Image (cartoon, rainbow, N blue to C red; front, top):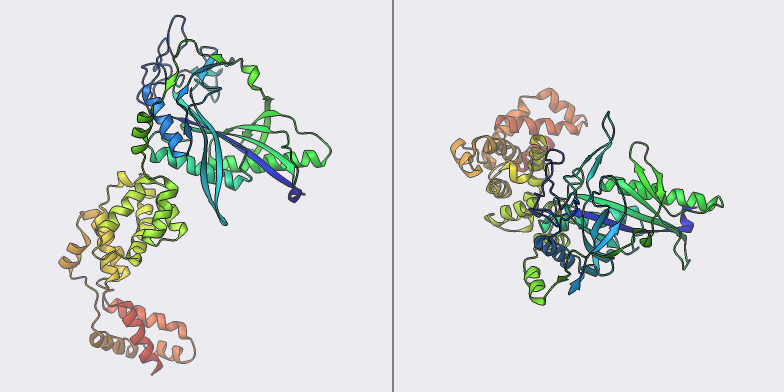
Length: 482
């Protein structure tokens, strides 16, 4: 039944921007203050108060527009979107309507068959509303600290065809915002929110189906689940002879279902009209080019470069570039390698993905807060790849380097930990170990070849882990077979 239909999905992403002050007043823009302490007559909508546009809000909006390949409108203006909620003090929201500052862009996502382009219809500037607190034992309370916080809304065309594509698009948007350092991307704090417009249509049809908008999704995984549920719900309605109703629905994460909230409003329901208290925005070519010059390398471009320049596979490159701080750490570690080649780049990638990320998880910190010298990882990679130390010794040195702050080269020299590669000496130990374990030798001779590992382990134990494991393995095999 599902194969008869295609999903048609558009996403609206609201991103709170990291300006120092709010969109149209001088109140501090900071998460976590005591309720209703970061407010003033402007963001409370008091009579006689007038908004003043935050220039940094405009610059951050343009930067995101450039990062998503949008055209930047030379002249745009603000409008009033009229509706009443208890957490909207003025009774209207200052936003953009007919002429958003950024328009006609695109974001590329990676698929098995190559890159897919998701068109961005618009990015417009607006202010956030306050926040209603429902999860209390008393009546709903309203905190207006968030009222007036600067937002951009990033709206796609209905180009997304699956929950998986939606997840990949959202990941690109979030990472771009973080790379630009204009949004924290923290969904738990409400810094990034997503609404999904979802409809289904028969394959080959030339008209979209009736869409439902799903709100209240606080993670990308919940967006995926909500899209999957909603697509199946709509197909079931159509297959049973019913009609999908255009409405706004909410995601219930506890039950993994969408539930109806209200009928979907149309643009005319909001009575948009030009904001009389604000001038329009004029973006000169010089201003745009200045901001363009400040753009960093963006996530997908960095990922592709990590694949081509460092020879990493798609999975490793994706993990390292998913966090800009980890990507920077990786490149710092690579830059101080003695010998720079793909094998050692891979070793550094492995160290970061295993031991470094494990430490980050244990300490609940990011890689910057971990404060781990990248030279430690570089030297361990050089030492192990040169055969100076074994992998086992490398793990022990890593632990000591963390606790002492010493570099691996110094630890190896101080403790005499260089790997033993003298075949004559190792062979003497191999002969001694085999002779000392006649019962195990007989088991090996009887066909239980897995006991070879026992002999290898005993030799490494005799040499305190310093013997070259490959040489040990080769010599043990030689003597057992003779």
